[in-house]
Image 1 (cartoon, rainbow, N blue to C red):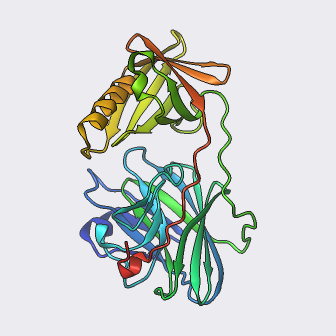
Image 2: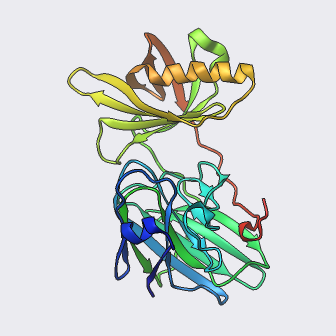
Length: 306
C-alpha cells in the first residue's frame, strides 16, 4: 500500500510521503485541490474501514476525504469521487450540505464501505461518532474503490485500514453544553419577519473558550468568527465569509438583515434555555433545536448521475 499523487506540478512540489502519512505544503493559495490516493483497493464484497487522522491542518481552506477509482482519480477539480468535507461532494460539486462539521486539525474521519453485488453503502464517522449513512449507490458502479484525500489547505494526514469495524452506525447528534450548539432565532423585535432562521455556534478549534464560529443561511451560507474578551465580557464579530448566490428581492432583504445581525454582535449570554445575543444595540433571542438528519446521497456520481 502506498500514496499515489495526482499528476500535476503543484502536487509534485507540495506532497511528501512517509509510509501511511502524507503531508501537503504549498506556498500561496490553492487554486484547486491537490489529490492523493491510498492504494488499498476495495473490490470484493465485504466491509472495509479506514480511519484518516489529520495531525496538522491549517485553518484557511479545507480538506476532503472519500473514495474514488483509479480511472476517476484526476488532478484538481477533474477528480470524480464521493467525498466528505463537512458537506458531501463529488470532488468539485456540492451534493448534500451540512452533513457534519468541517474537518479540522486533530479530527479522525472514519470511512466504512459495505460492498455487495447489488449496492455499496458508505457510513461516515467523526472522531468515532457515527454521522450515519452518507452514500448508498445501486449497482452497477466501478470497482475497485480507493480512499482519497483532497487538500485545499496545508496539512498532514495518516491513514489506517482498521479491522475493528464499528457496530453502531446510526447517526448520533453531537451533545452541546454552554453556548455551543444549534440555535433557532425566535425573537427579533426590530425585524419580526426575520425569525425562524437556524444558527450553528461552535468553538473554532474545539478547546478555546473565547474563539467561536457562527454560521447560518438565508439564500447564501454565512460564517463569522466571534472572539470573546473575558476582561470586558465583550464579543467581536470578524472574518465574515459567505457564498454569492442571488435570490428574490424579499429573501435578499432578509439576508441583509441577518448579515447585519451576525456582523454586529457585541454580546452573547445564556439565559436558561435561551441564547440572548446583543447586536447593533438590540437584543435577539434564540432557542436550541435538533437539526433534521441529512439524507444519504443515492445517485452514482461516477456515471454522471445528478
